Length: 440
Ligand code: SF4
Ligand code: SF4
Image 1 (cartoon, rainbow, N blue to C red):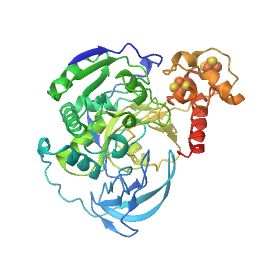
Image 2: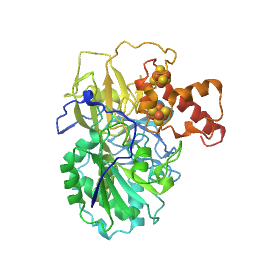
Image 3: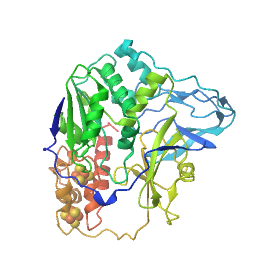
Image 4: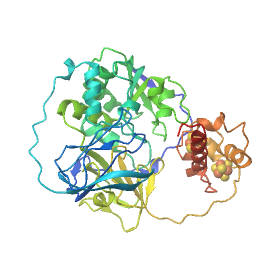
């Protein structure tokens, strides 16, 4: 094992004053009366429903089949009756979804068994992960085909980012703390599945104990294990920054780690990997943190997949503050999306629901050239210059130029005293460019 201090990362922002104390325990949510399972979200291709309105389904029953590994099999997280299959509003737009009303009873689950996965071939493990509906968590949920190299193909490296430095987003480090041995087993399973040349563990620079324990639990995977101690600065654990940290390519807009041969997984994903292989059952639950300045006491809650946000917020133990009408973000306040429809379902990829008070916000003002946006940009860009170039349609900085290095972290917008939505404008431009090139 080698321990490395990450000195080459630049920019970013440390959110010291946003720290909240969270109980180190997971509360089980009560069962939702309605569950919403979209046929696709994040970067998944839509799956095809195999149920119809009126059908009764058991817990864990297949609801929709994927057409390829760019989608995922979707399972019922509760026993129930299919009410309808209709479009619903997700943060990224409208998607078809299976709406289930809770009905019937839970069957006794078989005891979780410890499969001897060490005897399974990498191809068999890959197929098990796919058929169990494992999806990479993270800011943009990825199906197996966009998360792992094809079955039997070796990865350059497996990277585990053990924390997020975004305000109120502690789910990954809490899960690592609470289920460290299971996270280590998830890592070992992925090592066997994708056969990387090395493993990288990325931990906060002050957390020497957790990295030592994780390395101990990981055991000897037969390849080098490198530990990187990184400052708690957002967005140092984004995929793009992690890849630069471990010596991979500079990811540009629309490229994924697996396109460069790298696999990045966070503790929540590793737990899903471990539970799918060891437990031998589809992914039906996940853990979500409820945090933010409109929450009096943040809490970790285990929910059924597809549970609507309003059910989460009405759970006992979720202590909302006096602000009865907070802004609701699926994800962190910088990387997540604000939702107005509280029927939006909780799905892999949402590790935190952030509730923020509605403080007074001013409107957009002209740029005062303070250069704060450039000081925090982790990609070394000058957002104010890019913004002016957008206004002028200056092609040198735009198509094929600096703007494609933007990773959409939102920091420039966050620090801008003129409230210019810089990151949104860059994202809109880049998405239009991709559509124009037929990649959308
Ligand atoms: S959103 Fe883009 S331009 Fe703005 S700080 Fe992040 S990487 Fe830099
Ligand atoms: S932070 Fe805002 S006001 Fe300051 S230079 Fe950047 S765009 Fe201009």
